[in-house]
Length: 492
Image 1: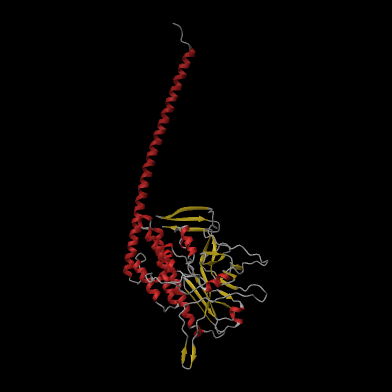
Image 2: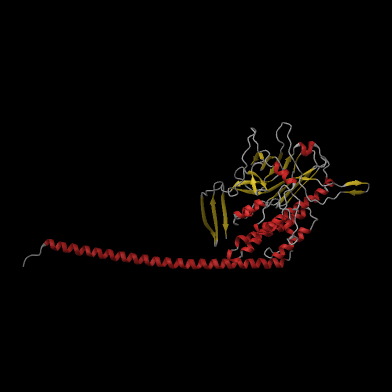
């Protein structure tokens, strides 16, 4: 028969070879797919197991939180230390009411009570930040915020009462050298400095409180007046809005802030007088406290609108003076500068710097000591700056020693609290000198203000790097390298 075509055989062989290769490739592909599928299944199962484990951990963490809160309540109950449970309105109201009615305050007693008040505020803030929305009703949340504000206001009111009580007996503690009275009282939460101008001599117009490092230099007109100067530095900020003090709380709605502008609380320049026009006796006693220009929550504002009275003359006096020092040498006025609290934040607490009126001092008549008693509370000194000898505007020179537990990465911004607008402002303050080595800052102001030192909230951004590495069983070290600092957080 005819011989098969060699070319056909070769083609057949090649086709068989290609088919074998294709089958082998397909087999390898299937094998690879099966391996991937098995790996995927394994990963899926391990991920599911991990997810289940995380969910369990989340549930047990929630349970731990609840147990922890219950345990804390039980321990508080057992301690019987007389401090209220912040979650029980009756206890907080009773605590505030009893303290409000106690008139025999001195600075040391207020400082002791301050520690209790700050602990209560911290507990309330923790409850607001750590309790999930489904665990706490909106009404309860508002009530906790209200308690925080009332406690803060009451604490400041008590500092004012203690100041007034000290001023009434100032002449008993006069300094042998100057004839004036001064003292500084310090603890971990605040520093209270007061200087009382008993002799009214122009050569004693400046003073440095050695224990605290704060000082002032008064214009001549004040050095000849019956005036006291108080520098009260609180290492906490009870002046800024609550969402600034307690990061994580929601900001107030616009409608609330409009209402705040219409009905501002009394000004920080009015350190002691209680609000006039209070007729509603059903309001809790603590609501009557002097508020140092602090904002109230919307709820309490609505409640108190009818009880607000107009600003007092001394407040108007202060407002008139608040824009002094705004003018530059050329006479051109600067634009008013309101601090954006999302950009700059107070760091290191608040300095309440006040000029106060002196109450009548005790007079010795024979064997008797007589004093005229006035029932007006602490009064601001109506300071109206005149012109200095060189024709410029008189100003108060202030020097503050900065707290040791605070780091300012840049020169801090000095701002004053404006109660009417409920805002920090940078106008009215000039000639700022910052001494980083000595940890002090000095400046001039046209009136007496509550001031704070502000820092850019974002100056350490952007973060340069971060790492998390284990240091033991269930322990790790989290390190963040920022622009100015490297922060290490130990996690257990």
